[in-house]
Length: 222
Image (cartoon, rainbow, N blue to C red; front, side, top):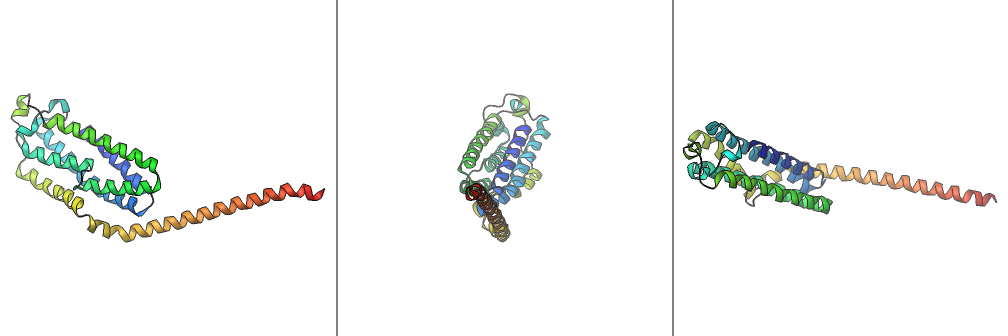
């Protein structure tokens, strides 16, 4: 369980880098939002795994089954966090992934298509994880008698869930805060790209002129 969530964390970081290397406002803004999302969502997932481990002393998916019947409050928190991780609309993961895809489609349709495939695969294994651990009938005494989240655990999970909904439903304050810096960065990068392209064109033109001069010189000598 912990290993699968760690793999999803690596996937999110790859998506984040994809947005930054789009080198446009949408992609970089999505990458920054995704940094925040990664801290909130992945941190919440690891906290939830810790809650399970404290009660069952195992993180094996095969040892956990039907937990939603014995710990329904945990199942709700885990479900919301899982949907946030896979980018469900209305939660924070969707905002970052959507902006990154918009930015990458402007830069490279091929890379954007591979990114969409990654989102689908990520959603598939996270939904598989939730189905294997939360649904079904508890088949061991440990799962049947597991105690649900207490007030302390609800207290430190609730602010993270509120952040997931806040960023997902109203991301404008975050986007407005980063907009000037992102715009300045993109403008500088575009200026450097144009300067590099101009220098490349100048070098190519010079080489062509030299080649033409070298080709006509013997003819003039004759």
